[in-house]
Amino acid sequence: MTAFNTITPDVRISLQTEKGNFAYGPGIAALCRGVRDTGSLNRAAKNMHMAYSKAWRIIKETEESLGFMLLNRDGARGSTLTDEAVKLLDAYDALSADVQAFAEKRLAEIFEKN
Image 1 (cartoon, rainbow, N blue to C red):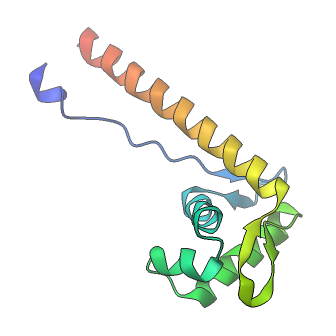
Image 2: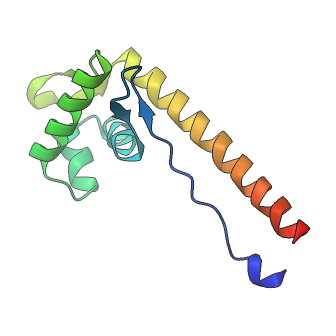
């Protein structure tokens, strides 16, 4: 089993609306974390090596898909996450951690059986 000790699952969660439209995944979650940590969409985008215009487009498309705002925008002073965005990001991160932990445990169990 030593050959399997270096293999781990990499689980990525995507959330969709009830209509089946993609709404939230690892990329937008990382962008929201960046805004939370820096107070700026522009800085968050730069930290991700992404153009500000692309980050802005992603935020707008996600807001349209979800039906609520993700950012409180304060012009040149930056941005903060809305209460809804904080709740969604926290839920997304908790779900991702739970699923990742389950996948790691389950993979180890499968390898032990073989």
